[in-house]
Amino acid sequence: MSATIRGLLLGQLAMVIFACGSDVEPTPADESDITPVDTGGELGPDADVPVDGSTDSATDAGASDGSSTADTVFPELPSQEGCGDGEIGGTEECDDGDLNSDTDVDACRTDCREARCGDGVVDTAEACDDGNPLSGDGCSRLCVVETTLTDVEPNSSFALAQTVVSGQVLVGTLSEGDVDCFRVAVTGEGWIRASTAAEDGTCVTDTTLVLYGPAGTVLTTAQDDFAGVCSVLNPDTNEQARYLTPGNHVVCVEGLLRTSVDEYRLVIDTGTDSCDRFAPSAEDDRDSDGLADPCDDDDDGDGTPDTTDNCPSLRNDETELDFATDESGFIRHWLLAGDYPQSGGPECLPTTDMEPGAVAELSPEIGTMAATVQWHVASTTSDRIDLGTRLGIRNGQAAWAFVYVRSATERAAQLRIGSDDGVRVWFNGTEVLSVQTCRGVNRDQNTAAVRLRAGVNRLVMKVRNNSGAWGYLARFTTPEGVAITDLGIELSGSGRVVANQADADRDGRGDLCDTTPYPVMMP
Image 1 (cartoon, rainbow, N blue to C red):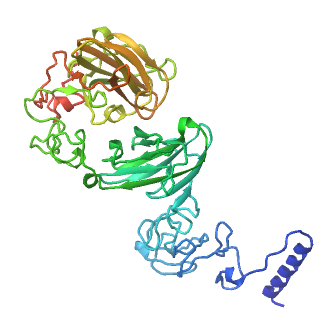
Image 2: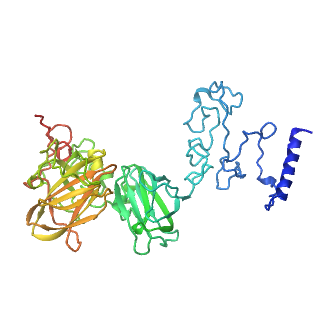
Image 3: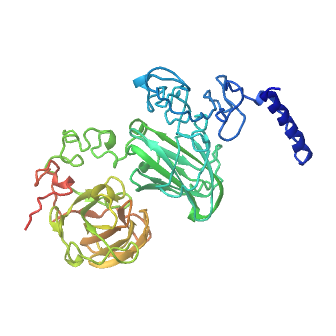
């Protein structure tokens, strides 16, 4: 009796014993579920078996999820002394000599195995390849993009965000206090749309969405739309979701006020055609030429291309600059000084060190010294200043922001700020806010009642960074919360700043766009 026949008889006997000693009925084998494997004889330990133990198989005729890629986990092949010599020998599947590659599409790999699903390279017959044989992570074990994906913990922060692709349906649950974050790539002049609405447009999930840029800075948020309880981040109406910097962005979903959510459905879509798709707003189009600045070769319309303009955001002429709070009351132009090392103190509260000098005596101008650094102009087309982009991100640092605010009349107002992380705020020499919380920056995180003088007022902020992203924003409203849009914003005590592109330190950057506008005079 051959070993093969003996093995089959023993297997049948074992099934009979199992059936007699167990309440579980054996399942008859279905020959249609068995994939023949040519092993040169009996089945051995290196036989091709799906990693999850399933018996389904995919052939060129098609797989259950539409893939034509073989549903196979390849065995570990013993190293071949001749692998790479251009001749197929031993257990080699291929050998193209010097053309063997672990990165080229469809190439024979450097271990002399054929290109395959799970090798981390998207080959011709594959829609994706994430380098593993697992499903449920956006790319199935058949190298097919999964259109419905379950959230995988931990994914509760920007750093831990789960990678997804545009158009995927993400399904998950949220416990109380939980957040789920998803990372998606944006290319070109990109945009992002995200929604927790059901496929038929109904809203069944009470959620909030937060969009982060590649540096981890909060770009915008989307609350309930109040037509239902879903959230929609729509680039057609939200300027912060379009003209995005190329790179990985993160969308986080959380229950309203961090409450638990039994199940949510999130869809994230991206595009690359912001320049063609959206009509630019006034803040997107500084020179009013019909082209949004990210799509314009000459943002300020002065005839000097951005690539050679020493200050692309301001015209090269003798125009006296006239800044004001925007339509939402935000200040978009500041004098900035930093960074300064920070240590000690509670949590993320800035220290009481007065690096640039006593607050009541501050009256900076562009290029004047603030201890070891200079005051320089920081402008933004959004509502916030990204300090990480301007000053770099290092743990334990602080920056000072200053602006002259001119009011035509004396009046009551609210100063509304946001910061990442903690902040101290002075208005006309009096400290009106202090925040020690480590947090991301959002609109109206803290509010202080202030009284605007008729004439010039001084606003000072010291923003501390504990780690990661870093930034701040500030705006003025009436006590009832209506934006004050007629406040003059000045970068000089005299009120007169001219856009003449002066370049005192001759570094190729105009003083109004330069982080070090004047030469530092060493003692």
